[in-house]
Image: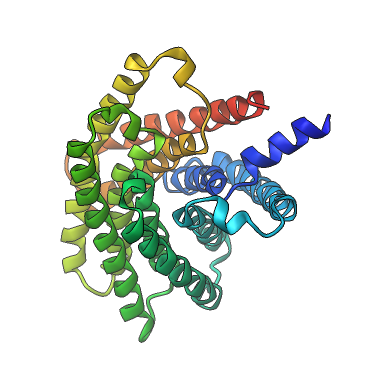
Length: 313
């Protein structure tokens, strides 16, 4: 492999937003675990560990080549993908090994708060840069809350991170609606990350379900956010189709944000699998098969984007 191609590989997989690849495969692993597809879940976890190692190496190489300028090369919110990917990996390991994640997640939450500060400052000074990927602020926050064990005073910390996630969700949603109304070429604002709008709703639902073990009212909130995610699913699908149909072929190229299409599907499937265990209605069995179909879609897209990303080199 030539140095030019190797550097292109680093540029593609060495940026912080590329950790959405890790988020996607670990999300699939967790979803298939709750769906009872344990073999696929274990295989996905192994692929996820390989992905984590590979992305970490490329990120370090990118830091070396960028000569410490990498912090200024990307939007600060992109680093939320890195935090989210690591948090998801921890959560997946706990499913198999019942690990206590409070200490490592407490350390991770410190980095989250630091990056959150710079992200909010970036949004304040550069509002024109706000896109759907800024929902990653809420995604990272809610994932930390899901990973923490609800014991003692940690419960209040969990609720705090969930509230932060909910606030991020509605704040970015309002900001994006306002920006969409102001911009003439609305298609330019739409990319793979529009799916995070739906995925964060499902993720918040999962967090409320887990928290509901000590506050049952949260189950009602969990159902509300699941319904919201379920309602947004056909909307984001339609928006994505319109984007593909109306875009010229030269405008359809691989972008790390494309992976944001996969993770929300995995999260929605996980949320639906859990909801079917709580809400005992006749049509819930149909939702189980819907979740399986979405898992298959997410898994297929993961490998498709991996191939497209490699072909970009």
